[in-house]
Length: 136
Image 1 (cartoon, helix red, strand yellow):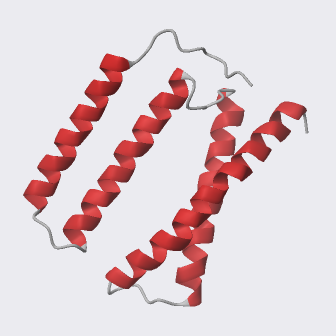
Image 2 (image 1 turned 135 degrees about the vertical axis):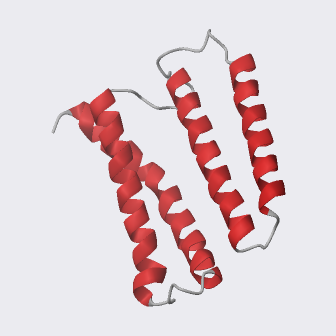
Image 3 (image 1 turned 90 degrees about the vertical axis):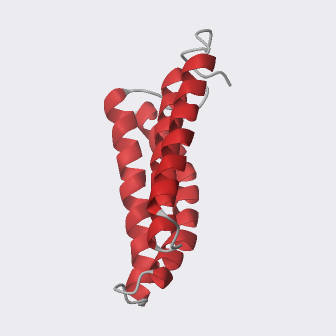
């Protein structure tokens, strides 16, 4: 294994601590709110581990194949952060409608407005002087 791949794996395993933490907190909340999923050891601990493994493997694969740093200090990293934020906002909107009982129309309108505002802000403030490589 070359040093570049070893560095990518090490960085992504350190970042994956956040994935497992979110999974261990988020999946039990979803399981307790959804009636058709039984709260067993497999669902409460298995789903977070599966989510962690898939996300970590996907990020290692993306970084290895594309040779991109995907750091937030790079334009590519900022774009990935924006895309992840939009996806997480969509999950939150679906949760508010499905489990929270909020109006689907108002949640959809709020989600679309916030998404358009975030993309517009990103497009307007995107600094072309950002370095393409991270500095230590």
